[in-house]
Length: 349
Ligand code: GDP
Image 1 (tube, helix red, strand yellow):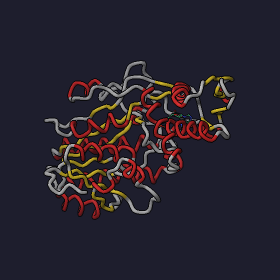
Image 2 (cartoon, rainbow, N blue to C red; image 1 turned 180 degrees about the horizontal axis):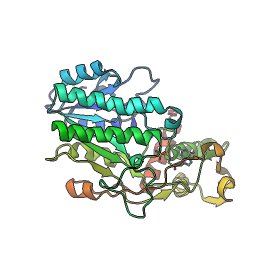
Image 3 (spheres, rainbow, N blue to C red; image 1 turned 45 degrees about the vertical axis):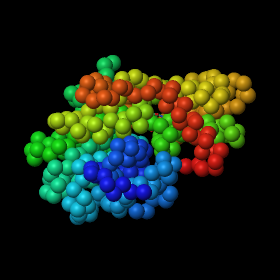
């Protein structure tokens, strides 16, 4: 049931995605009216809302951020207290194949939104989900923060940085309350299957329950700062309630490799993972059964992979009640549990 008595309204753009569905869940718990923006045409896109049990509690509006008039109409009519812009293209590797689509979705979508807020709902507060990809080629032993220079190295990073800087300009030039969350990788059971963590949990659940061929991965030694998505979405509303708008890094400050994540997830599913070989010939086996769990395929090896970055959550820890993300072992365990359960009930998304 939609909450008709709610006094505060949030418009969540990208509500069918990982972050949108998790954020909607926490906003509903806090008594907000949640309006979710979605685009028509994606098949079975509401599985997350169904699984989280909130499909009937959110109001869905069809909105294409590329159409300024559509964005304007909705923002003007709704006059939301908060807008969370979590929509757009999110898969870095695809941005090399779809550079223009990525730019249009991520940059022009944000521009249309900022213009709509500026011209018709200037009290609305905006959270824009930017990305650690804005740091691009920076290599540093130190954790990166809001003051680290930006050096994107792929079309996705460029689109996010352009949008992030636009948010900053509208904040400074027009006095809008608008900020960017510079989101380091964040994972969990709601992650889409093209991202490496979910690819791993999905396939390990398959191998545990049905056996079959090993999963194919890229570089086992690639590393990321992986946080738990629900820990980050939980704090998003709080950053929009602070006195002054400013950008925030969302990160854990710790790096883990694909190999480490694979190992933790394999243990969580009950395998005993062992690694053999090097580089392109690396494999991961279950020691007890001899089952091959993962092997390397050149197809998933990225020629222009972004170097590992760890981010500093210091500002977020200081300014909000955020107490840090759960550890990567908790993330792996949660993801495995969800994928085993889905496979048991025959729901494989
Ligand atoms: P990204 O950091 O936003 O690109 O998130 P991904 O989950 O797609 O990739 C995280 C890291 O895992 C990157 O360094 C990838 O190169 C690496 N990786 C290794 N094998 C794979 C794979 O099979 N799929 C994906 N998506 N990434 C992989």
